[in-house]
Length: 197
Image 1 (cartoon, rainbow, N blue to C red):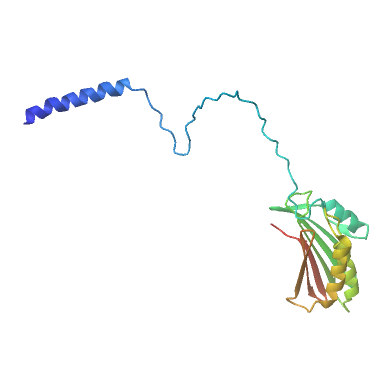
Image 2: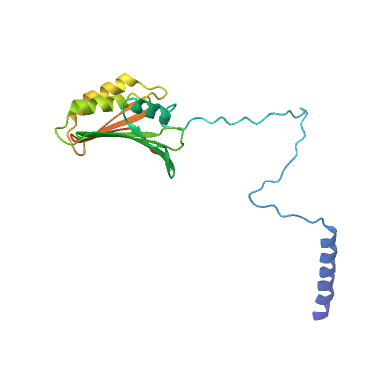
């Protein structure tokens, strides 16, 4: 029986070698690549250009530039530092100090020419004056981003600030898609506009 299997096995090996030499070489297709196919079509192909990407502003305070804020603040006696990159953000800080108070505005953005977030604060060292804080933060609330409802935002700040009850009391409202947060204690009140993504 052993002799009858050997010629069969030998014939199988020879046939396999012959057939493998006749077949075209195949290139394996990676599993993530779909082989191209051709489907005849009666309509000739037309050239359709790829649409060009238009870069839309991704800033959370659209249309507002740091310069819009700093120019307004410098006209009111603030000193503004040059823009600084603090990965992944750019920040510009403006301050105005006196014996009685310290005003600070931090302008944050993911791009040097865009604004995502503005944090402004009023620190008062003796006899805190809510009207003074409301006036300054109300002014900040009027920064001119696209779609801003400046007077509505100012009125909200000026009427909400006197009602803050202290630590942990955060008042929030959205104006034209931008979130405003007002919080603090009488000696340290903050207004935040926008968000840091």
